[in-house]
Image (cartoon, rainbow, N blue to C red; front, side, top):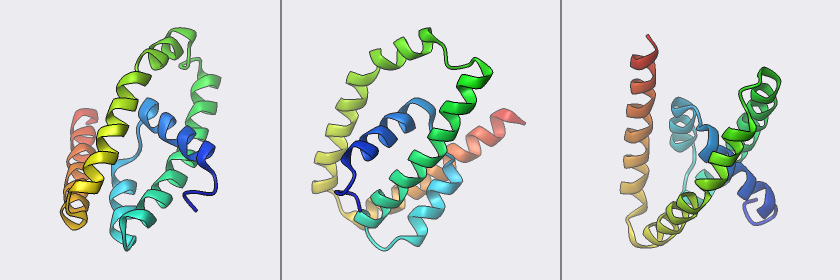
Length: 118
C-alpha cells in the first residue's frame, strides 16, 4: 500500500506536520499493527483522512490564512530534516523498542493535550 500512492503519502505527512494527529488514535494504530511497514501505511491513511477534514474545516472557519500557509512553507525544511533523520534512525534502531517509545510518547502527548485543555 505504501508504495502505491507516494503523492498521497507525502501529502498526508505534510498535513500531519501542519495540523497534528490524535495521539490516542496513533497509539491504537500502533498497537493493532504487526510491523513498522503496516504501521506506516495505516498511519498515513489516518493522517490523510483526518487532515483532509481539518483543512476543509479550518478553511471554512477562516483559521487557515495566507499567513499560516506562509509559516507552513517556511517550516518545510525542518520537516524534511526530521523526515531524513527518521528514515536513517529507522534503519539503525530496534523496531520493537521504537514502537514502544512511540506508544509512550503518543500517550504522553495526548495526556498533555487533555491536561492543557481542561
